[in-house]
Image (cartoon, rainbow, N blue to C red; front, top):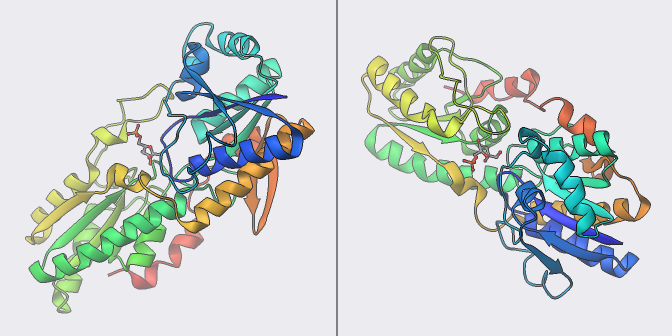
Length: 344
Ligand code: F6P
């Protein structure tokens, strides 16, 4: 079989580990040939660059962040005749199967291509946001959490020295997983996530309470997609997949300014941004990504198309793509309640 691989959406630590695992497993177990499609769906839509992948080309990449196949946020379904062109170009490239490594958007396209054309695609769940259904974890998530925790640890000492409030804005889009786990592990004094809309005034109250108790600094971890009950966030600027462009909203800066106004304390915002997606994956993510890649190669060999590799407990399984992209996996309220004793 000739198997294509592509990586789409925001990059994420562990992508190269998946690529390596698919290629090594497919070649050694099944004699598959592999072709890397560069720049995600854009690469196949525009019949762009490709590169052959074999044991040599995937050597030495296990620990590397980013993706040797590069990425894009192109949505073939947002272009007239786009999906048909993807199918046609895949045929021209002689592909018998495609492994799509991506998040909600990339795998959403994979799911539609499979439903509309019976396109032979297998998905691998990637995103630092951890918001894909059907899997306990996506690889890259715990690396992003660790990066955020290291930043929070550093911000603690400087916040303490200056009696300041440090607002730490983390990624996660409309799911608060990164904020919740990094806030718990970093000992945040307030954690704000999209699933639990909060009033800015409540955050100010919490900081004032701490002040009265002699705790003159506070760490506030805020998820970029947070909603405040006492102010409006502009949601009109959308990307190709119809998502709000959160990068243009500056929620951390807004919150720091409001905290200054409401408490009279010095407050600074730190936006961790793409730092959370860069660099080397943690051991957990390398191992998970590798297992996903092995499973994806097995799925290709057994013709399990329209499905995605997933992890449940300590087992790697596969689930229908439709299940994975149907609804966003957000933080359940009971999990957030576990954080409450530590806030304030
Ligand atoms: O989905 C991953 C993610 O890092 C989100 O957490 C974030 O909102 C978005 O991608 C940022 O996208 P971009 O790299 O296009 O700015």
